[in-house]
Figure 1 (cartoon, rainbow, N blue to C red):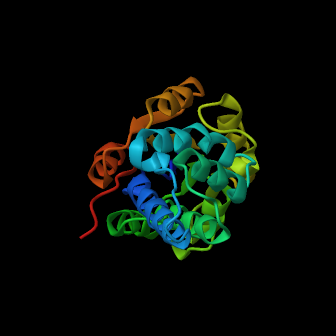
Figure 2 (cartoon, rainbow, N blue to C red):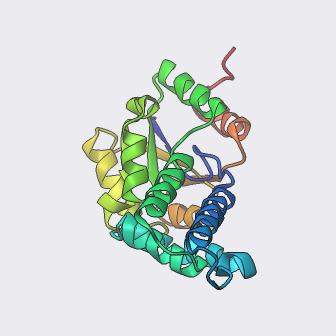
Length: 226
């Protein structure tokens, strides 16, 4: 029986680094620059200083829209307004670069895992809610060349855990020649795992590369690389 191993991106293949912390650092630095450029005139304290949770809430609140059709300029302008910082072109560009870089760079341990799957001819794919800039950054990287299927929310027109996203992944897998494969899915969000199980997938919480080996060893005879 053929198996297709399916990985989420953020929180799975790409570790959830301190994205919000780095974006906050960028915001505060630009707020300080803007304050100095006002040449001593009275300015209000940015919201991100007095209420940092408002920025974090905005980051999550609009992320689904960003992962579907909202453009980066609109998304990061919205975040700037939530942070109480003037959304200059320079700030928008730096926020997009920082967020895209952190959300698209895999760890060395994950790269080793994917290389091992490639070496034993075990098909795998990527299935992610990811904004278009992140999707495009991922698809430019060499590690994704080994993927049998890559599906991202901007092209799917759905975000997980909507069943439409899973249905369209299945269609993409069938088009890639894996119509009858058993889908083994790793995600860090319980709602997505439950949605996958409703489609008949075998779904497992991501707890690092070691947990992948534990799950796959009896299924695919996958062993740790020497």
